Length: 247
Image 1: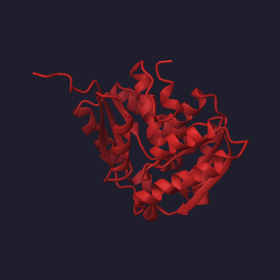
Image 2: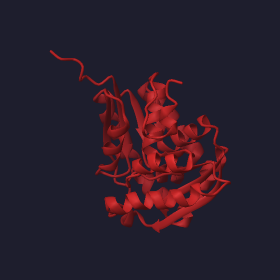
Image 3: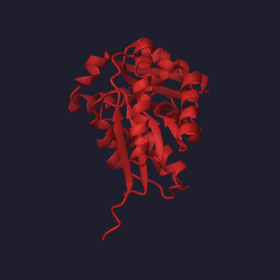
C-alpha cells in the first residue's frame, strides 16, 4: 500500500462564504506536497459586525466538523471578519479556539501581520477591492499591530460585486493596484487582502518588477501554517515571505 500520498499536515480553514474556489486553487499551487487544505464555509451576508456575530454559532459547528476530520490547525479566513470583531476580540477568539481544540489557531489578517513583521516591514501599502470605510478599518487594525499604512489603492466594490468578479478582471486588478503602490518610495511592501480574487500572479510578477514584498491572505496563511508545523524548506516562486521558510 502506498503511503506517500498521505497528508502530513491538515489545515482546517473556515471561510466567510459557502463556496470556495480561489482559496483552494491558490493554496494548492503554493503548498508543498503533503499539505491538505480542509474548508468549511459560513454565510456572512455583509461586512458588518452584526452579520459576523450572527454566524458565530455556525463557526463553532464548522470548527467541530474540521476537528472531527483531523484538522491539525484552525485558520479563520476573511479579513473583513477580523476587522468587524476588532483586534482584541479576534485574538481572544483565536486563543479560546486554540485552548479548546488543542491545535494552533490563526486568522488570515494576524498571519499577514506576523509575515510583515517577519520581513521587517512597518510602512505598508494596502491594495483592495473594497470601499474606503473598509480600507479605513483595515488601516486601524494594522495600526494597532504597529504597521503604518502609507498608501491605499482600491477599486471600491461591494461584497456582491466582489463575489461576481471574473478571474481575468481580478488578476489584472491585483497587478494594477499593487503596481500603483509599489512604485512609491515610502511603501516598503504591499498587503493585498481578500480571498475572492486571484492574486498569486501579482505576488510573483510585482515582486520581480519592484523588488518589494507582496503579502496576500493565502500566502501569509500558508506561511504561518508551515512555520508553526516546523517545515524546514523554502517555498520558492510565490513571494519573499514563503521563501524565508527554513532560513
